[in-house]
Amino acid sequence: MKKYIYQAGLGDIYEKVAGEQRISFEDGLKLYQCPDILAVGYLANMVRERINGNNAYFIYNQHINYSNICTNLCKFCAFGRKKEDELAYEMSVDEVKNKVRQRLDEPIVEIHMVGGIHPDLPFSYYIDILRGIKEVRPEVHIQAFTCVEIAHLAKLASASVEDTLGLLKDAGLDSMPGGGAEVFSSRIRERTCAEKLPGKDWIEVAKTAHQSGFRTNATMLYGHIETIEERLEHLEALRSAQDETGGFLAFIPLAFHSKNTELADISSTTGFDDLKNIAVARLYLDNFDHIKAYWVMIGPKLAQLALSFGADDLDGTVKEEVITHMAGAETDQAIGSETLIRLIKEAGRTPVERTTLYEVLAVHDN
Ligand code: V47
Image: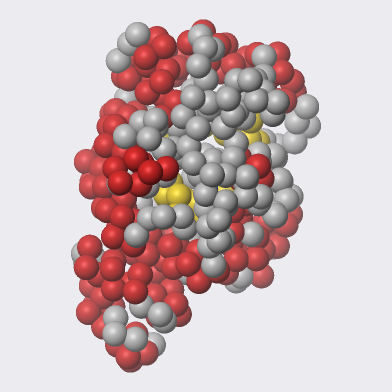
């Protein structure tokens, strides 16, 4: 295999990966430009197996999107709506509690909850939905509010990000998901999401969360108008923030879905690009323990293959995804844990059911 990697022109990167050395920005460009996906994937798999062995993780989780009303109205998003839009909605505290109640008979260990940047919900609403969820399901882990939402909530609370996070923690917040990162480049933000929290501020909120004891995730929305240099700048910013805090749990590349968005003329990502992003992320983010192949966005079949191209996690049961489906995702809105287990087993990996913080709940290796 070493000879094959050299023939693909990746010999110098092979030596770095085998020697557990960090790869450079130029190496990242070379990997993105390399047409040999098997060679890139082999390198990513070396790192994947060094960090996670043969384990492939998944979680029994439930998504709740409390409201799609949003003042940012990003061009790549089909979920966010103006308040007066006929598809706009906002859940009352009781409706959020009911969503949780409806699934009390399922072994859900994580509630993943995000929404838009709402123009007039008060800070107390966010406290009440966290408290409400914990009332109905006290033991559940709440992973909620992106860095973008946290910055908005700090304004609502007229408090620092640190103090706001303290209030949210007291109300039941346990960790934060990785959304809202998009691509940090100001060129991309100006063209696609000018109203959104700037990339450097997203990183600052994440670092503050880590310093306040929260673990958080990170994402990158790829496959629209970004260049590979901009993707690598994004990965570089995450890698250096992780060097400082060590607070990121997982990185999730998000494949752009264009239907019903202002960028509807952009074609879907290809399987090649999806695998490439997972593999390059695995190689570049040497200080991240986990890379997720999010089956909702790239489909369960490709997510399964990604387990040999750098990914070690399929995310979870999801129950039920809305954001990507409004943008035309053709996957189901939820998946059974038995299907996740089958996908992982057939990929030759060991299915490990986990908590949000990657504590092992069950190893399905029989
Ligand atoms: O923040 C918006 C992105 C994110 C589109 O942290 C789109 O474990 C594709 O962040 N096409 C929400 N993506 C999803 C997300 C997430 C999902 C699963 C796990 C975790 C985690 C995080 O989806 C948004 C935005 O970045 N997004 N519109 C679209 N049209």
